[in-house]
Image 1: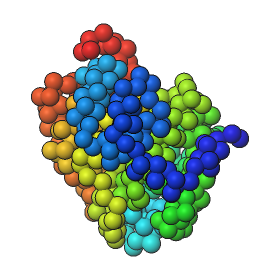
Image 2 (image 1 turned 60 degrees about the horizontal axis):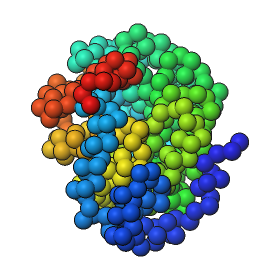
Image 3 (image 1 turned 45 degrees about the vertical axis):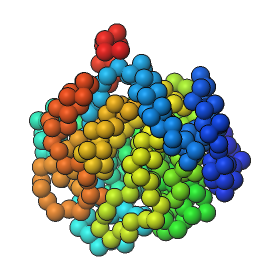
Image 4 (image 1 turned 120 degrees about the vertical axis):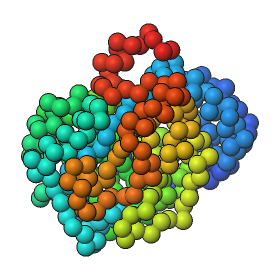
Length: 377
């Protein structure tokens, strides 16, 4: 199978890092002036040399997003079905080596969670689990989706990497989008973070979006975990991955997220910091390289910072998130995957979006977008 591995193997981490740091203001200006921006332009836009151009990048990002998506922000809620996990990952609260109470929701508990989430008006749901093949496998997902599907217009999943055949089954049952994050593209350092379990296989994870693309899934979500390694180098590889996928599976839509490491039980916060200003730079760089990509901002970020990001290129936000199984209805002390930062209710988030002159969209993105494409531009 031809996959992103062939492209990825042509690059060395150290060379990419050095070339980003060597970018000049002249190269930044040339990237800003370009009509079609390449991964090489993306390097310039995320380089230290681009920081003085942040205002210009932000304005361009705002214009491109408005042109393509109108003034709308799609709202979604994650539902954590299970915190059981076979992997040992040094940055995650669900890691197998943590002696925590494990929980996988039953059919009745899933319905309880749905009832609470629906009361807030959500119609777009993200199903999340740990990576535990003996408990949360494809049959479990199919049963969960059967329960969930009548209640939501749009179902996304963020679970362990699966085979192409399994993705085809899930797509057939109604999954719209699959999120799979590489965490870090630093191949040598990857194994220092992923000590045990299937996730420790770097290339199997790297080729997962290819399997999702081959399965004909409508949308694929990518990200790196910001804070594991140098954010610029990691983000370049993620942008390169996005560029490859778009050219290869051109009928598929794409989203990108910016998870920064948050405190979690038994986890040390890393040395690789990315500031708020740099995160804005990164988000704008993605928008400038790709005007069609959906940009998703989670409740890992603070209330104030999320408010500022509304006009800068964001198209999707979670709200009122709980990151533990049963967190919405059972109110049980099962462990969170990470601490959220923005603790506002979905209604409060929607009010702020509207106060910024944007429309909070609770229903299915596509049907809404087709109906309103001529408005709000």
